[in-house]
Length: 162
Image (cartoon, rainbow, N blue to C red):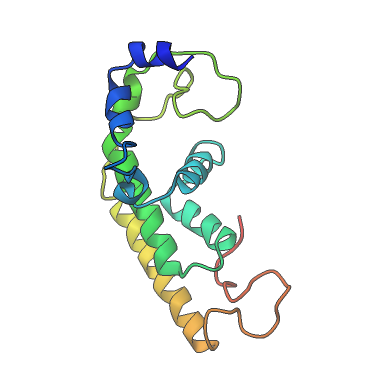
């Protein structure tokens, strides 16, 4: 049980210290994204094989309540930290994986492990698209999708659903 885990892990003490009465766990705030968002980013990146721009387009449809600039910031933050930390994934040992997506399954991962952290072309495209969509929403009278609710677009018709 928990006793074996406490003996085995040196890093466990650090995470346990964050949960004491005086401290609260603030890693989601530190990362700037929730664990649910991280899981969605990871699944889109690995299973759907999305890069920054494609992930942005997917998430615009999944998160219609968020402004395009907010979705853009979340995607760019994820990919920046993914690129900065990707090389650390190459040191993991293979283990048993019961599902298709797992953060440490690297046995068949032949992707490069050094990425440019700027993603300058992709991030510029995301910024351009987010600005266009924000202008479209403003021109249509707000972020509600302008009139015909229930259809497919909700005011985001400039982006093709992938």
